[in-house]
Length: 380
Image (cartoon, rainbow, N blue to C red; front, top):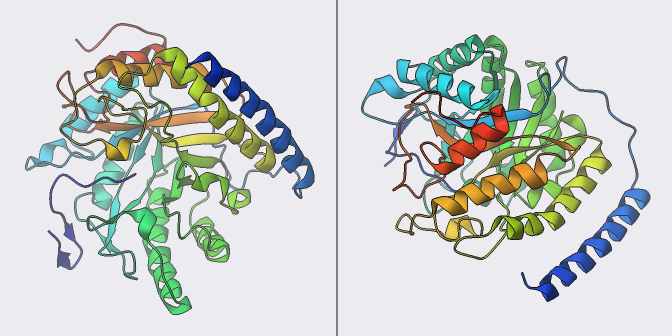
């Protein structure tokens, strides 16, 4: 998913600025897919159910009732990870029923062909250890989830090299980048680590990623996953070395200004069939390492086409949240979700905001109802 930090950041050493016919077709497609999926699972070489590769269970408290927790960027240093505002924000998430957060330090490379990955100075190691301590004090688990960011208009899914030498140099740089965060996750007793995010043109390099996983396992013994894109997840071959399947589930569901709940539920069915088959093949649960919808017209369709000036549509976002809890959450292969995203500042969102965050919107109430069983705001 394409996202840009809210201000120019400093990288270490460098400054960078349905109709009935449609329903019938859906049923036919589902039956056909189920038959083909069953054949594929039966024909494909099967591995025996794998034991967990880590020394800790990835689902100690059941499904991850997760939230992508944002380090708020501001001239005020008192709103980021580990701050007083962060403590208040995490308390609010606790009241919503959140039991896991993901924290996101950023790395940087200028272009898709660069082989050097730098570090942003915004999310310091100290701040990530501090926010982990805050979350643990509330009984919440923490997943470290480093991201890479490229100078616009590029995004991480564009990272690709055209020679073996360049690939080797990039993987060496990425090895150093992710092993550092694996070491930090160990020091902070973090509860899971996502080893990569949406690097879809690199994940076809199976041997190199297996080397990355081996290096990470050498320093961190907690559960590991990888955050694949919505389609990449079906092509990754190294799921056998990870503890659960991660997918950033930004599926284009319904091309409508305000998709109704029933229409959204129908649209999820073919996606669920594919994810179920994937889970069965690898014998691992699927976690939505990211999922979210803009509170804007057409927010359940192609989110990358929605601009900042799009009309606000709070109901669309609330409907889309509700559809996930009704269609996806009860599935036996499903391990939980991390909603994109919630600010450490404990501020933002609201009725005039058309971005992804659920804070101060009807979708926050949908979260509360499904995560905690409560329907009222306890912080008001």
